[in-house]
Image (cartoon, rainbow over all chains, first blue to last red; front, side, top):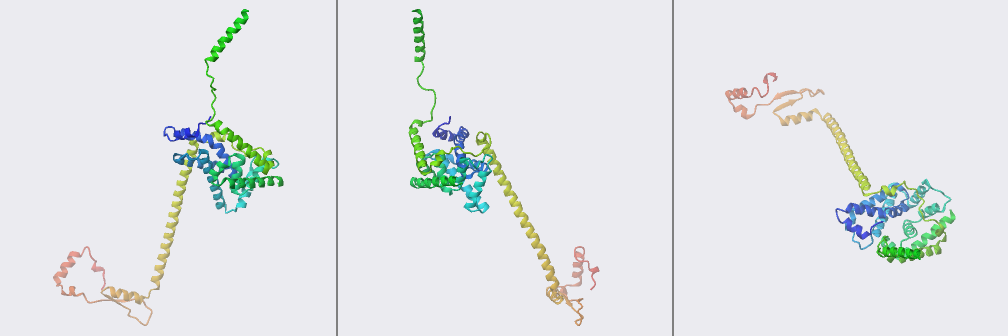
Length: 181
Length: 197
């Protein structure tokens, strides 16, 4: 049973209970954040690295977290930024275009030991990777994390209307991809 | 009749025991669970309807992520594991910086060595290119000794040396003063016996 965020934050601000509170925050959110990152990056090793960097940043920044947004909104925002920065760095390092990166991510999916091209879950993953980055984010947050548009708006700093339109386009494209592949 | 009495007594005992217990459920639920429950249910229904309208196929796909992850991965992630790993990364970064500094210093030292060798070669070449007359003229202006090439018709570079007149202060000195000067400096100064004038 996880403690409430407000209680954990209070414990984090106390030096004596800081490390324990941080561990509890980590345990509470790591799985959701892991999948949020992995849906963007695909590789487990890269996701693990980004997740660890994220928690290092959380450790450093949580002291100054002002609670004017919910903790998980703040964590999701950092996770999103870290994932996008990672993908940007990959593009720069390999000097690849966005289309090449999509192919790379698609190949990573196919390289998974459980990959089965006939199964809809895998086709769905390939379809998601064919989306532009922004649409991919919106689709994942809405479809998998089931976040309300209001929360997504805080994470992605975009209007609810724009997010609804983005999800609409993304879902259409995904379905079309699955039907044609 | 007696049996009925026993049952009634037993029931009364049980009731009095239960009446002493609290009726509050011992289970815990997350704070504000009931406040947010309706919102969460509404959101799920809205999402399903929305997706059914746009892309009905998606509602038939299982939402569980199919990717493989190492066994017990989430159990192994902790503050300790992160700080240990990131500590190593930081150490590695410091080591990389030291290596980079060593490489830069190595390149600089090699460049300086090459430049020095090149410079010495240039000086040597320049000396070989200087004419003997220029060297003689240069020495002539900086000492009391006059060097002259006795054979101007040939390319012979050997020179005859003439000693110029002693300087005025030496001319004015008496023999005794000179002898005294030689005696004082004979050990530390030039050995005149080896010079053919």
